[in-house]
Length: 253
Image 1 (cartoon, rainbow, N blue to C red):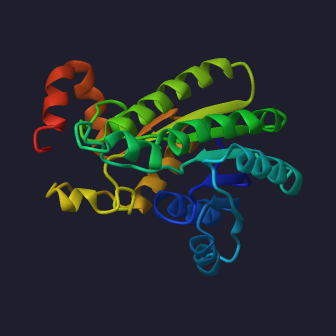
Image 2 (spheres, rainbow, N blue to C red):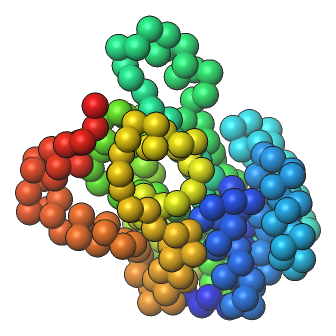
């Protein structure tokens, strides 16, 4: 997949991995549109990177996903890459009083799984008309082995992993390539400080490192881009799946 001369939408592009991807794609000579719920973060990103185009959208709402897709196809007819990056991560202690209500109050399934699937389906007819196109799903190493205290998040990433495989198979005969990026723990505000609060000492990778690995993987047509320690995790899951599950959850209480 070429990594220059594209027109790219990155969801959740105002911070973290999304912003790092936006910066590296811009520097590589692409037109980049980022979207997100929080206008202030989008504007800050645009101040830092004036070539960025921004779109405010709450991707948990189907009507806003549809409006975003329609506006992009109208304003950026050369759009040929969708990067599904937006998502949230929450602990879910299933026996905690009020767990059911907390799940509904901030449902991870909508932004992490429903939104990328819906947005992909909305844009696929347009992408299929381009000379070269791609869908890039930002998944997680936790798609391969779950961490028990984040059961919903891990389930959404496992489902996105499966969706990526199936989508790749369906689109094999046309010009839309499907990539999946599987990062390890990354130094972002994704979990709102939950790791620190529970005393979990894990070395986190920088968003810039994930972005660099992503562009390298795209250029090499590496359809599953395992980043950092996830490369080892992929191998170990195949060899000793039960032991890896125990190791991943060893220090979690």
